[in-house]
Length: 529
Picture 1 (cartoon, rainbow, N blue to C red):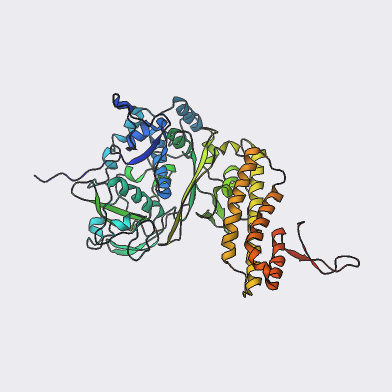
Picture 2: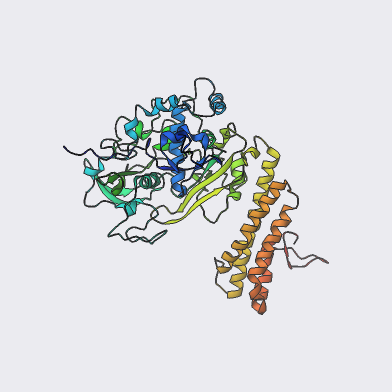
């Protein structure tokens, strides 16, 4: 008798690491229901979300991707995937009052499609395409080092760890599925494994929908609050029968046809992938021994409308999401999360999910998750930051404080940008460089100013003290500038360069026309020093 194929069902297997609420992380062996395992399956996660403080996935892009999958599943289970019947917000409020999802609600959704959550199902493995075993060259698979996005592969540099490509360490299914999600949402563009579909043979893929972006998620005191607060409100006319997640479709998509239309929030959250993958388990199903990774569709799927991104407008009037920047602290994005029309030349737009998140709770934090990377193969750094509970300060709830937050952010960035310009100009004058450009002083000054500015921002916000903020940020910039340029003051050229460039801290020099009895033609600052 042939042995049964390996199975690993994500509904039942413990694969999602979690942190339980305080006081609920100890196990009472006399009561099996009191067990608080470090990892849970999807079914247990949904049922026990009120007992869970947060998901403990370490890699920010994996958590960002997992959140989107969980939002779609939660919307289905809670029947909040359509605008009606009745008012959508009222129905969600009722669920908040009830305090949990029932076993009946969870079973109603997952039981009919239980097999669709099997990671190794021969016909419909979860978020994979089984046709790749035939459509790709089996002798040219990607390998597990390429699947695990934190490992180096090919000629790429070592990032988190060194590997032996001749004897790779095989990931367990719970590790593999998180990196499967990262590929679907943050995968690179460029050359991939060749795939032949009918008369089409190609070996190039488009970038994933979240590549290089930073997404913002409301987080509550419990995972239950977090999932409900993160649900996007469906538009009128959205139908659950047509707004389908990939695992809900009867047929696999045609790779050479136009991609399936996104007909609502569930499909928009889960069906934008530009990559097709297939995990190859070992005989036991306890490890993944190989993987196929290739293109899913040759046409670009729009990522516009993602409700967790800050959308900005380019000079050519094209919308684009705010990119992930590991050097940029989260407080600098706070006004774009709280104000309906924050200041800025890029005309940033508040993530759509925050328009309704406060209906769940006013004590919501914001977690920013992203991956600083370029459009192709270069990965730079993860981005993971969280605020205190600040969403209750949104313009809809507290317009006065929200506007002051925006003003603080503008002032902090103004003096940070002036400091950057000043040290560049001082360095150029001191070294007689042909043009103003990045230099070691810039890195040093930024490392001194921005952490101090962040501390000043939160101190003033916590105390609701907004008077004199301009002077406070200016002093921080002056201190950083004086410290960084001090070593150059011992020479005539250095002293002249640093003294002249220091005016940039106050807006830069301007020339006044000569006046009788006036200042003549000397340079003065545009702002009182």
